[in-house]
Structure formats: structure tokens, C-alpha cells
Amino acid sequence: MPAPLPSAVAALEPDPGAAAGEVIRMEGVHKVYDLGEVQVHALRGIDVRIGRGEFVAIMGPSGGGKSTFMNICGCLDRPTRGRYWLEGRDVSELDKRERAGIRNRLIGFVFQGFNLLARTTALENVELPGLYARLTPEERLTRARAALEIVGLAERAGHYPSQLSGGQQQRVAIARALMNRPAILLADEPTGNLDTRTSVEIMEIFQRLNEQEGLTLVVVTHEPDIARFARRIITFRDGRIRRDEAVETGLRAETVLAQLPPETDADGE
Ligand SMILES: Nc1ncnc2c1ncn2[C@@H]1O[C@H](COP(=O)(O)OP(=O)(O)O)[C@@H](O)[C@H]1O
Ligand SMILES: [Mg+2]
Image (cartoon, rainbow, N blue to C red; front, side, top):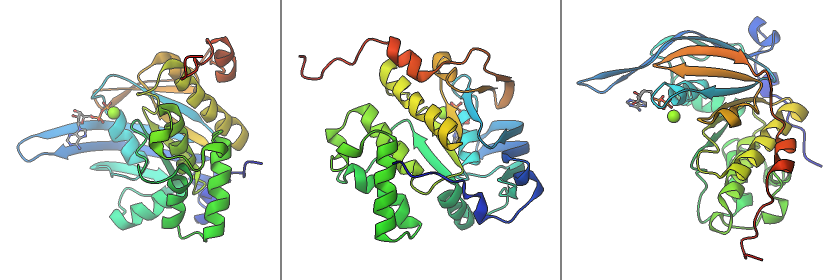
């Protein structure tokens, strides 16, 4: 049985925004990268609210500010100007150490490049965030096994990344992101390195986590067909939000998978 993934909101003090179900709220967020000679104005006044249980796709051309937005969402970086509330708490002024604490408790990250440790098994990779969160070894193991089960890789727990396909490695990365039971899962082009079928398999996991566990998801993608697995699409261009709309004809990953040609066997059977 996969373990439930309760929101970490209980760890924070009550507050009006969070009570209203707001996970992310930004007002007038700007980000300027200061490179000495030049300044890159990556975000130019972002106002956005994302509620608990939403599944949002972020789209838009390269250089539009998507990753910068995600990094601020995930407290990897902070705004140059403007305010950001995460689960009702103003995190725009927190220092590095405080942001790291928030990240551990509330945020799960998935990147395009998987970022797994090579000489470490799938299970150990998944367990890693539990180490930083100082879980007991028993709790780490229990949670890591449950997370691998959610992504359908329980049988591959002892495999090293090199023994896994790209899609399987990304599923390990998702399991790792679930380890600390985040309130929100952020994924920056998680299917950027994957073929169509594997990409849809990843979206199937996201849809399941969203619908069954109520996990809030924000996923960057270049591909309109992938964005349609989400329920809302926000489009960035030149550091601004250009569109923000509900997905009208959404796609069910399960249905799409059933229609795609089956996986070809690696052995060429
Ligand atoms: N660490 C950084 N230092 C300097 N400039 C950056 C950095 N990260 C991003 N940028 C610049 O900020 C702008 C937005 O980039 P980014 O957020 O990565 O967009 P996207 O993810 O949509 O491609 C681009 O002009 C990019 O070159
Ligand atoms: Mg990017």
C-alpha cells in the first residue's frame, strides 16, 4: 500500500492565506540577475496564486523566465523585489539557511536531468532527503519503499541509475521528491529528455498524485500536448505572465497510454 502524502501545512502556524487553500502567492515579483556589467531582468512583475490541489503547467519560449519562477517558487532563490508567500508564510526575506529548511519540509523538486547519485542505488537515492530531514533509519526505509511503489519501481530498489532507463531514473527522482511528503511538487521540464510514451508515463504518475493524494503540482514543459495533462496553463514570455487559463479539453494519461504503441522490448524480441 502506498503511504499517504499529507501536506506539510500542519508544520506551519495557521494564517488566512493558507487556510483559504493558497499554496503559492506572489505579488509584484521581479528577479534581476546582476552580472556586474549587465543586469538580466528575468521576471518583470509576477502576480500569481496557486491553490492547494492544483495541477499547473508552465509554458512559454526559452528565456521567458520559467526556471527563474520555479526557483523562486521552490525557495532555491528569492525575488529581487516583490513578495512571495508559500503556504501563507512570507518567504521573500528569508536567508539561505531558512530557505533550505522550508525546502526540506514543503518542496519536492524534479529536474530535467534526473540528478541521481550514480554510485547509489535507487532506494538510497530516494532515502537521501530523509537523511537531511533527520528521519529515523526505519522511517526512511519505510517511506522510501512506499515512494518507489507509488512510481512503480519497488522491484528496482537495488538497481543503480546506470541500470535504469531514462524514464525509470526520472521515476526514482519523483520518488525522491516525495520522500519528505511535500506540500508542492515542482518539476522543471521533467520530460525534456524523454520520448513520448515515457513522458506520458511520467504525466500519469503526476495525475495520480494530484487526484489521489491531492498533491499540488507545478510542471514546466515546452510541449503543448504534455501541458494538456495539467488543469491550468500559465504562459511566460519576456519575464511576464502572458496567459493564464484553465485547460478545456484535458488529457487522461491512462487513456493516451492505452492508445500509444506498446513499448518495444530492449532485447528486440
Ligand atoms: N543564473 C543566472 N544568471 C544570469 N542570468 C540568468 C540566470 N538564470 C537565468 N538567466 C537569464 O534570465 C532569463 C530567464 O531565464 P530562465 O528563467 O532560465 O528562462 P526559461 O526557463 O523560460 O528558459 C534569460 O535571459 C536567462 O538568460
Ligand atoms: Mg528553463
